[in-house]
Length: 507
Image (cartoon, rainbow, N blue to C red):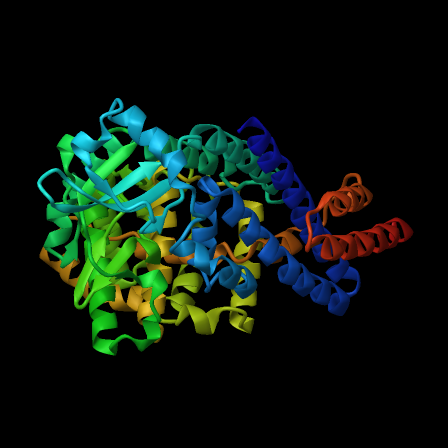
């Protein structure tokens, strides 16, 4: 097991070095030779996407969740990465049942048959932290059991170390972004996800809430559930991730989208406790039934925060961008001393252009580039934004909801679908419902990483030129990269050397 964890970390370091360094140098090359830089960046997508997806698939655990997040954002991330990671939304790599048997024996103190006399050893689904199997209780009831991988802890610890390194490198290229807070929130949810008793509590708490919106949640069988074994009602059907969503009846797709929107808003802004991982693989369809599963990743919102989001909701319904900024200031997103006047002007521009646009139409358009440049330029000068703890997972979950709703109803944006309910709720009582406009605008600002890095590198700056160091780093990664990515990494290394020489000749 120790060797596997070390190998996992070693390949992760190579991946960070090869992809991170290549994108940085591609951005630099585009300044000198735009067409060559763009061609290089496209080639990085071509070999980097399958390498990244393969790494996530082979090593599993927390990496699967990262791949699922990538697969759920076709409106923001390069489509080569989205397509490469798409299979991860529904299935993680399967493990031999003998390894899971160790978890069962430890959980039930060797008396597995007393709790689960029959278990189908073929996995029903392979999740990121464990497997889901069919089983029967002593009374013959068919159930689904989630069994945690026995060696999960060391793998998650290694993934978190790699994530911390990647975020620190990202922070160097994009100063001002809350990378430390992102890491802290991911680390917190990862620890909680390893305790299935927490997941049982979360699902039982939200089951009656979601039932009001037509979303079903499997009932937990407490007497058979342990910290590494979750036993629950069996949900028949297929996941949205495994289906051809476009082939579903349009009316049913819109109905599903509205159920998801209403259910998630009820969780976050009425109950103040929400499902943080609503990707397509966690929704099961059986006719017109829609089940939501996997409550391992959750977070809470305090009553004062929900009240502030009520005001934010009212502002969204009225397209009052100045009011939105005032609420964000009270939430702590906008720090004291920030350029509020400039931020309000920017918010009016962003909201005016994004409120009614289809994200897929907007992506890669001239309008997106102009707006992204404007936002990036403002943020570099501002140094007055923060992200309170709860907004990290909240924004991630909203991004997943937006991506899924975009697949179900591609002709409309999330805000367009939610606006009637937002206006209705705002007029009925000032109580809670959405962070949609804020999250939509913020996610639009977070355009793909290579483009952001390019804009930052284009800004005047002084200091040493690290291009030769990056070229050497990619060259080392190329020599160590696994097949079939070695050829592509070697090509990137050769281009990196050329970029290094160009950099030295211009300095």
